[in-house]
Amino acid sequence: MFAKTLFLIVLGTAIGTALLGLRQRQLELAHTNAVLHRQIDLSQQLLWGMQTHIARGIDPEALRRAVAETAMELEPVVALPAESKPNLDIVDASPASYSGPGMNSR
Image 1 (spheres, rainbow, N blue to C red):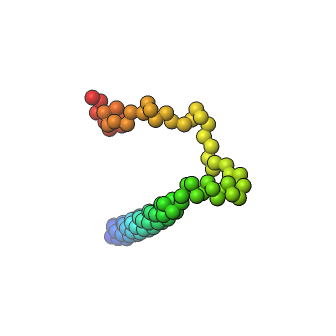
Image 2: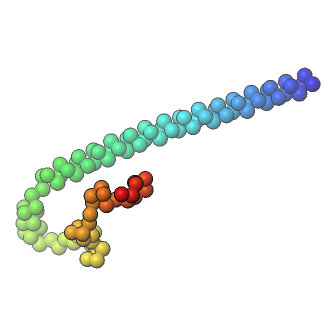
Image 3: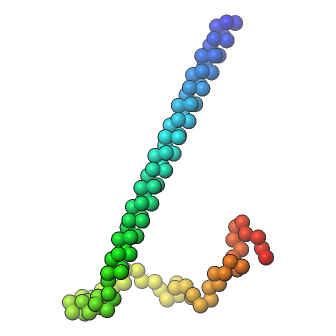
């Protein structure tokens, strides 16, 4: 009887230790994930800042003249078909018109 009890205590301790180890690993991975996401956000902000800086420094008329002078044939990066462009005249973005998930109907 003593051997069975001792075996169960050792087995329970081993299982508990393994579970604590798994929990610790889960916490470490969650921390690493948070750090990586913070780095991604900072990189994204830096990129947006650079794009804004470049956009502010570009004079559209000077760009058109430079393209015309060099006779470059440029195409739009993304061409949308006319029917896929949103008609902004009919869009109602007021909060009262939104009835998405979690919103009470009025």
